[in-house]
Image 1 (cartoon, one colour):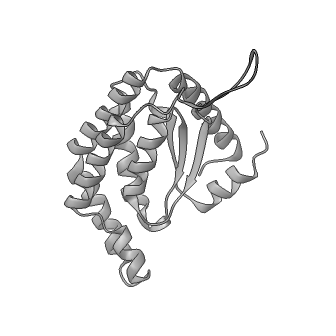
Image 2: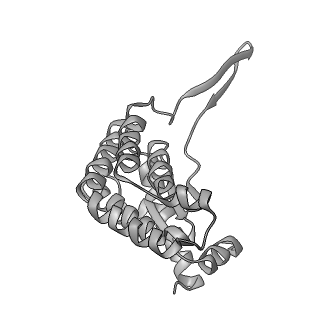
Length: 194
């Protein structure tokens, strides 16, 4: 079990990695996204096996609609991986000028987008959401701490392991993506004031 001290350490490490990520070029972040997609493809059988275990454990214990969101087949996984590559093709959101207005002589108002730092994202039994959220976080120069539904724990662990493996081949530190696995960890993280 992760203690409060460990959660502070996880959040601190993620923040440090996110600061470095925010300063990387768009090209390096896009290379990281491509490496994530490749890593996910290389372990798709393991991810699907983990999802099968999650589905077997959840059968008849969750609502049918939730079960359908939990179920990750080869097509859904392939689409999620293609989505990572699609995110890499998007315009770089970091440093984009959103507003540029001259208010007066020598007085210019300029709004420029920048990374937030570390995103905390809680989602239900949709393991493919871990892929989408991680890709969007990296594209936008942010770290992310994920918490998926308990029903999808094996799937999310397999997915995050693949994401970290892909990132390990790039300029992006794999610790920029973290996964919490229990409600208690999430509760503790939300109560941190540091």
